[in-house]
Length: 105
Image 1 (cartoon, helix red, strand yellow):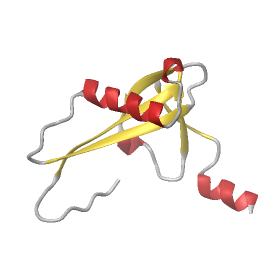
Image 2: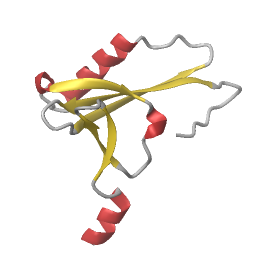
Image 3: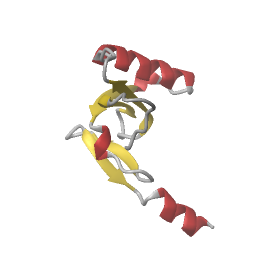
């Protein structure tokens, strides 16, 4: 993902945590955190708490979910992902959103 900021601020880190269904790997929520130079990093446990909180606010039954930290740069726009339960990593599933939209038009 490209970032644009005002002034001389630079991206220090870009982290991502996914909330997924432990039964089938379906991702229910993706939470990303961008930290700029000069700011404190968000600890992983705080990021996990926030991911769960946002999932609950979206109506997800988080008792059936698990969390996984992933490299946000491994996800491409307009692609759908799931978690491979045996390898605990992201995998692309289905067809890109743009192609699915064209087929349903």
